[in-house]
Image (cartoon, rainbow over all chains, first blue to last red; front, side):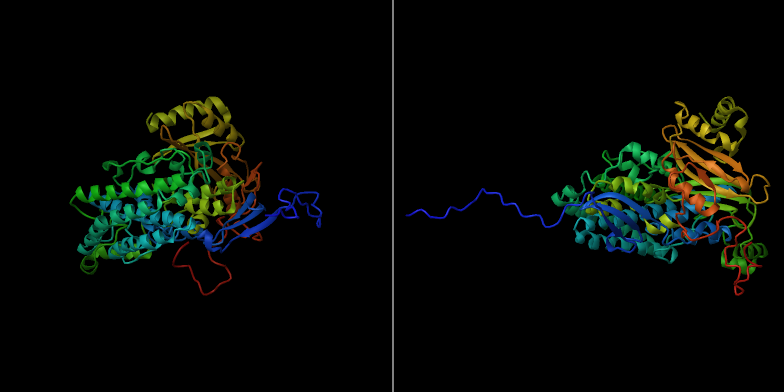
Length: 412
Length: 169
């Protein structure tokens, strides 16, 4: 064997000739993410200043679906404001509806029977599960796992069927009335709830097996978009996002409403406040919600499904036709002429994504003098630029979906 | 500390801290409500936040209420504070006139006030002096009025097909 005459230069460094001069100052590119980008799951715009793949600055624009709810609410009788609350966080409308009913009930001093409160708890916890299904499966979609999303949505569909059998609507529910519920649960409703309680845990376990300890999912979500407890509190975080950062604040425990003090449940908390922790907190909350629903069914008291508040709660139709007093109340309620005391009242509920508060000022008129919604995601979304700064663009997308920012609630 | 004690304790402490800046205290359902003068707002909030016993570390929400009949004190800005550990919740109010709708920003104490104050500026035109980025947030930048003020009707006044005399006020 003869050696080759030509030596192959394996270690020689070849330097290309410069064709373009390096700019004297570093230049950044601007990326307009949104307003209607398929990866942001809603109308969100962020103008990003990018250094390659790294985000240097972000400027969010909000208000694309602002519908002036606070102004409209000043011109609507109390029972006509419930449909407005549907359209805040539309992933869990029943919680918003119940929060509003309870605010008015606090103002007028109505007492609600235990049975109605327990039924409300069942509805609210179902709504919480459906809200968390959407958020958690969307996190999975953004990490590349489409299967869980499509699979879990049939359980969300079953929850919507339950709502439909109670109130006739699926997404924007307008469920319940000031003073209680519009009707008791029918046998169909109970059968569907029973089906949900027996079949959903298996599905949730399967989703858990599919996603939670998945190597790709964990690599993608652990230490992605972390929020410390101090930062979460200073930016007004509430709900699962705050609990993922390690603060065990839950309105259901801190200021119990609708008999939540009767139930035994745990508040899951995270440590790092990253995407994975937010996912896990929601995941555990779904199990706790299932437990609350089971307890509510087991201990469901007998009694009425609404309280005695004739000036707000529509009388039965046969009374309207046969009874003068009921007819008068019916007329006054339909025309929006209820007697409301003066005062200012704040009531908050644990919504799907945080403390949803209603600050109501009444001057005794037929409509609220001022109604302010404390919308949790409007308040915590302002921390978004700071969270994503210095991270990758793909992590920013994931962080947004894990924060459960709902455009309807953000923009009111 | 129950709510009555909380009311009296904070009332006494505020009287000694801000003196003539303290206006009134009352109980509104489950909330003690304190009214202070506008110039003493930041002093009050700082005291409430930094006092080790009270420690109102969380700004739950803030909002503006417009009282056009209340001459000289047309605007009220309400701050709702929360101490999560002890579960104390209170409200602090300041009143101001339309021609003097300025209030110092609370963003130095609570970063979360940033967007809340922008929202109140957007809808009521309250100027939060010292705010880092006071511009409209939900409405379009070109809007030339503050729509949540009571003098603006909910409907466009030029429309004749919508008669509200029987419904709404």
